[in-house]
Structure formats: C-alpha cells, structure tokens
Image 1 (tube, helix red, strand yellow):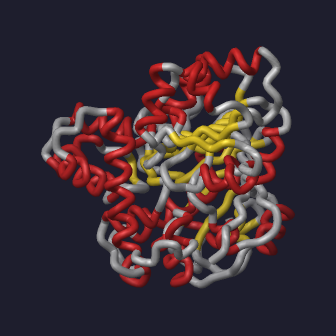
Image 2: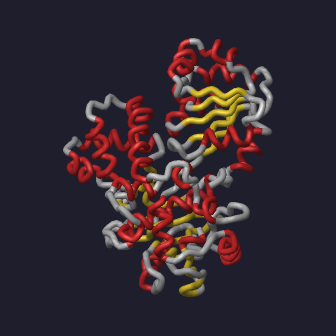
Image 3: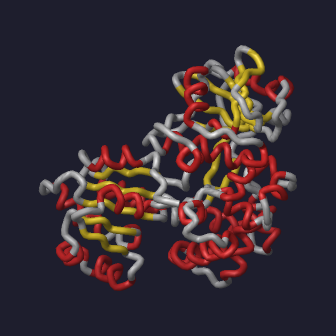
Length: 408
C-alpha cells in the first residue's frame, strides 16, 4: 500500500507558513516524522534525537547543535533535549522564517509543557494520533464530527460502508501506519515490538523501571479495562503492585499518549453526578486486541470486551476528527449515583449532545432514556445519537439520530 494521506496534512502546511516553529506531538509510530518529511522535507536537514550522539550534543551544547543543524530543519523526538528550546526562541525572536524549526515528540504532555514554557506564542503545537478510519477507508475532506443532519449525510458520502464483521476487523487491525500500510505484515510481531520500543524509548526515560515484564503485564491489565471507568486498585491488584505505583505508571502512559481519559460531565444543577473518576481509553484498539489476546476479528466481535472496545474505537475516532482539524474537543461522559449513564456528551455551539454507543444494528428508544437528565443542566440539550453497527444513517425520533460507526 502506498503512503496514506493524512487528514492533518493541510493544517501542517498552513501553520508552517505562519509559525517559525511547529511541533507535532503524539504516541510513538503514528506517522509524525513521515508526515513532516513527506510534506516539508525537501531542502531541509533532518536530525533525530533518538540517536544518542545527536541527543548528547543537543543536551550539552544546544547552541552548537543548532549551528551544525541550521534552519530549515526537522528535529525528531525533540523532547529528549528541552535545552534546545531557549536557543530556538532566540532564533525566532531574531526573525527566523516561518517553518524554520519543525519538531516531533512522542512524550506529549512533557513536550507541550516544555514548549509552553519556552516557546509560548511562538510555536504551533499539533496533536497527531493513529490513522483515522476516514484516512484508511474514506475520501474527501475530514470534517469534525457534528450531530446535525446535513453534516451526518455528508459524512456518509466520505466514508466506506461496512457490516458488523468489517467494523470489528477495522477495530482489530488498529490504526498504526506501519501495520495498516502492510510494511509489517506479521501483526503479533509488530505489536510485540511496539511494546518493547515503547518501554525502551519512552517509559525508561520517565521512570526507574526495575522489572520490564511486570510493566508489560501492567499495560495488559490496563488494556483489559479499556472503555471502563478507571479502577486503579483493580489494575494494581491484577499485577501485584501498589496503588501508588499503578497511579504513577498510568500517568506515564497518559503522558506518552498510549491512553487517554474522558472526564465525567458535571454541572451545578446535576448534583447526583459521580464526579472525579474518569473513563480510560487506549489510543489504538489494535494494541488493545493484541494485549488482550484476541487472535481474530471474529473472536473479538463475540468476546467479553466487544462492547468496551467498540466504545473505545468510537470515542477515539470522534476525537481524531477534531484534532486532525486543529480543534479542541469538549467531550465527557455521564454517570450518576442512580446508575444512569451517557457514554459521551459532546458540547458544541452552546448545546450538549448525548451519545450512546452500542453493538447493535437495531437500537431502541430504551437506550436513550438517560439523555433526559441533561434537561436539568444549565446548557440546553441538542440532538443526540446512538452510534451503532447499523449500515445506514437513520433516526430513532426527531431528537435522536442513528449513526453507523463507519460514518464517523
């Protein structure tokens, strides 16, 4: 398979024309470097700080490093040498041209913090995840997911329809370019190597890891609970570590983009909300399927985690439609002490849009009874949706759309 065009490409080109520094963050192996080199690599130097010699020079003599690797330049894995940022700032303040410094980094939160301290207002920071299903199977422009009829109808012309088995095949295959592009055909070897690389290059730089195999078991235990409310104690108990250790390791997994959270929706008029506990998701469902040892899409489709991994996939895909357009997303979930739940609440244009995610082709109105709790919120309730495995766009009623997963 040829290079897969990325939905974020137009945004990368746009900001490189107005910002002297552009930083693309995201988990390891999602295509950050490939995208920059393909779009803007011609005529510029490329240097990777994964190379220990380059890294050491950047850390110990950043001024000399930038003299040897003068702009325009692509600096890969720049989080290894935050010492560079003050000197890049000086170059920008001295009139560095737009697109002079293009950088990537896989330790997302650390990099954003470091760049924010030194390059605030001087660098465009973009977030990149794995391939979206629109990038793999769709066509045309990437649209932010919105719950209005015109937008949803447009989405159905840009996506590629599939049945429930095809949908779980997409979930099982995941979103990492090196696997999807068929560069690495052996899926199990690919994902096993991915975990090894992640531990060696990301985790060991953030934590004193005494037992790599224990950490690998921990990641697997977390994957078994993808799409659920976070239970730190249960994950810790599974692998025999303390709750504090589990909390620290999860924090590092979040910082490196392997997991992300949806925070609970709260409103001062909804005083029965369960506050604080987030829901945990993995950035790549193929990784979840590998870690939980599902050997085929069919077995996954009928397995114990089928509902949770479908929810993980849907939430991740919705978020990608926003980040690939350089937009913030405002997404939460709802659960109260009466066990009323809403899988996702999207807030946009002054309205709350409740979403239920279900592995069914025939949703009923019973799935949306919890939507009514939002009528008490201070923000009005807008159109809601059931996102499910039905093949065509439809509606439950005037206020609730039925959206196929493939159309996100």
